[in-house]
Amino acid sequence: MNKIDYLRLSLIDKCNFNCQYCMPEGKDINYLLTQDLLTDEEILILIREIFIPLGFSKFRLTGGEPLLRPGVVNLVKEIASLSETQDLAMTTNGFLLAKMAQDLYDAGLRRINISLDSLNPKTFNRIIGNRGFDRWNQTWKGIQTAYQVGFDPLKLNVVIIPGINDNEVLDLAALTIERNWHIRFIEFMPIGNTQLFNQEAWIASEELRKQIRSYWGLVESQVRGNGPADVFQIPGAKGTIGFISQMSECFCSRCNRMRLSADGWLRPCLLNETGQINLKTSLRQGMDLSKIRLKVKEILAIKPEINFEQRDSGTETGVYTRTMSQIGG
Ligand SMILES: Nc1nc2c(ncn2[C@@H]2O[C@H](COP(=O)(O)OP(=O)(O)OP(=O)(O)O)[C@@H](O)[C@H]2O)c(=O)[nH]1
Ligand SMILES: C[S@@+](CC[C@H](N)C(=O)[O-])C[C@H]1O[C@@H](n2cnc3c(N)ncnc32)[C@H](O)[C@@H]1O
Ligand code: SF4
Ligand code: SF4
Image (cartoon, rainbow, N blue to C red; front, side):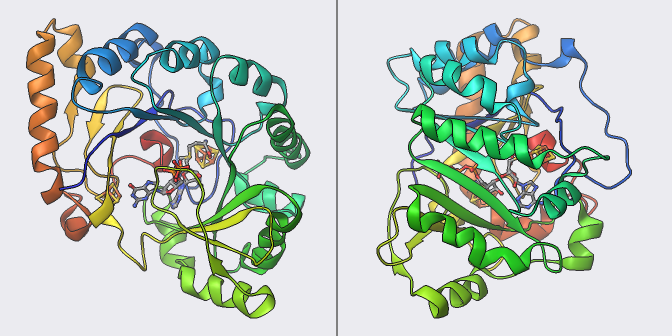
């Protein structure tokens, strides 16, 4: 059985973007009330008293948009300063990074993954649902700042949607030639906007690799990380190109992670809603920490059964009850 040592923590369910693939179009999302969010203190208790004793040592902060969480820099500092933390990273849309990158770095964050679905501001703004504002320039500035500040490896996440940004695969891949940046192409998953998913669906990573291979060639490579990406490189390039292929190539046999939502739900599998427990409720009801630990240990034991192999039975209704922004990706 794989070691489960990687926890993805969603810090907030709100976001300043409305990416088409992540949220249902035109549907209001019921956002969490502040009092329903895990507090910083609760997050730290759970990390220190529950997850670290159970062997977790790798933490990723995500959301919604994690940079919207008040006090996020201080939370980074607290988690980074734990001696058991072997890796602390963040996934962000980058919009607020230009002004926060240095503070995050100084607080101890070293790895950052930034979503960037297009190099074309028009396409980008269309994907993120900009409502009339251009957000590309500031996002691009955020990426540049993160690079200058020293985040390494710096990864860029791209969800390819047929008919929307699939014409940019080579342009995005080309970013890795001169820069030590790591692009990852993620296959669109049926969580978030199922309507768009059913309309446009996903493109298999192998199709994208074929395009890149026939233009420049492609060799296997590596980059530091804990996630499911298969990593390649254009020969001689400074950066790498990863493929996260949850639709075409199941990687569940190497699954090493669980997810904790901003309101305290511990989720054993991204694509299966079975077996979730609410740790915030347990904490607030005053449950003994050793009992909470035991509950999490039980979930860890049944996790191999609750996985992608059963994703068709992963939801009760066939539609995921939470959007990707509510889960954290
Ligand atoms: N199906 C599935 N998809 C995942 C899983 N982990 C990550 N992904 C997908 O990969 C996307 C990008 O993940 P990131 O947040 O950048 O994190 P990561 O790839 O684990 O990060 P590294 O540690 O840098 O390798 C997520 O939003 C998901 O779409 C997983 O366990 N299962
Ligand atoms: C939910 S977002 C949260 C963090 C941050 N807001 C961001 O966009 O990086 C995390 C990741 O989930 C990915 N994502 C969201 N919806 C997805 C979907 N339906 N299929 C595949 N990836 C998705 C995004 O591309 C992003 O890289
Ligand atoms: S992918 Fe990230 S930036 Fe886009 S809507 Fe979802 S949470 Fe927000
Ligand atoms: S789908 Fe579930 S079991 Fe598979 S890699 Fe993702 S989280 Fe792990």
